[in-house]
Image 1 (cartoon, helix red, strand yellow):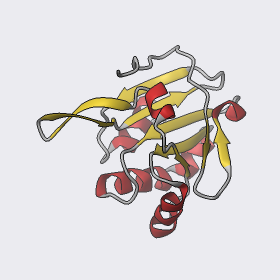
Image 2 (image 1 turned 90 degrees about the vertical axis):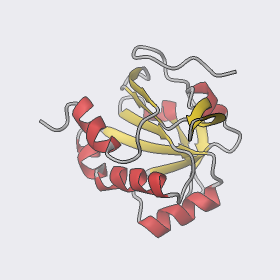
Image 3 (image 1 turned 45 degrees about the horizontal axis):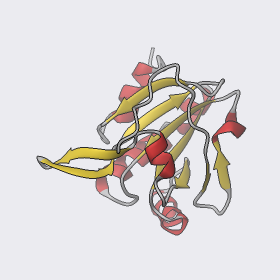
Length: 158
């Protein structure tokens, strides 16, 4: 069963997840700030690396605009730590091994892969506002060029 996709105005499901550095990140702890939560299939794969590097390259300007970035995958924290080190990532990397958060955000379910219907991680980006509500919900996003498009959608590239 696939969860209903989130829409602007919905309350973003709260979560606490382990991160690559041994700590945890809790969405509700970030109230008062805008949070970009993005879901990606696997650390250290070409598309996911491109996307994570794009977010890292843009983190200073995103933070200046009041945004935190959390990348969520089903990878274990140890693999995420290697990913951070290998690619000098500067964003928070969170581990959702049991896919509970993916499912709560409808970022896991049926998708087309090379023309076949498969079950897996749906590359998705959810922007949560200061009150914990969904501001932007984008599903089936492209890894390449996504951060630039998101910046335009958020009005950050004037």
